[in-house]
Length: 205
Image 1 (cartoon, rainbow, N blue to C red):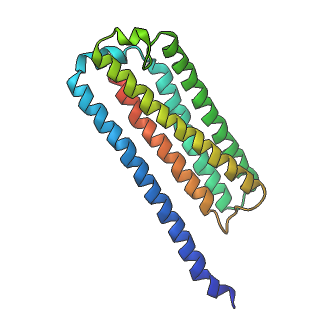
Image 2 (image 1 turned 135 degrees about the vertical axis):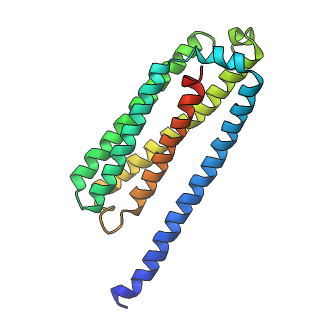
């Protein structure tokens, strides 16, 4: 059997993999879209409480994390370009940078969460129970949505670390970069979700 006879099957496999990734991303957008709608509705019910609660968040940390994630989106895109060009060392350098930036994001987020726990501004805290109901709802949504996003960041880092290993072993290269391209799509989604979270919680106070 000639090499050309295999090409259509490979093409179909790549198409199915890309389609599967896009379908998965759509389900993720539906999940967060529902949470965004819930946030919008609750904010319309408690605008004053949401405004006051928003002032408790550190906008500087939120914006810093946005810059970190946007930069990581750039580096993962550059790693894909490097792989497509057969530049393995550059691809590994950009992937390593992306992984490092993801860890920076989680570190900043953990610092922010620690401050909220210290001040009793977390679901179930005795202090939060004394605040107006709208503020309780705000912090409930804050921890739910940023926590869920954080889990996606952790999952993305796991996937990218696996991609790093496969690139280092030469299992991902210019002939078959699809795995890394799909991983990059997932990471871009993580970044886009955060771009929506930033104004909802940090900039709308």
